View (cartoon, rainbow, N blue to C red):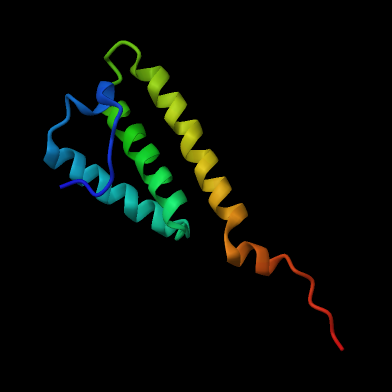
Length: 99
């Protein structure tokens, strides 16, 4: 059973639930490995990554290459936003004054 919701029926409808679950677990693992822990950005990145992988599996379908490119851009955007807005990123860029 998928953890997140996938509303893009153009990509998801032809994929069985087991395959979706497998792709989602791999996407979650990848997003965690790049250090995304914020729940909002994690969900957005995982959903985008799942769409990327599913669209790659269906590239022969009309319009799927456009979907792939769009979600690839979204994935990069969410990873970047998550890294720039994380509390650890903000702490590491603060200057430390010595007294």
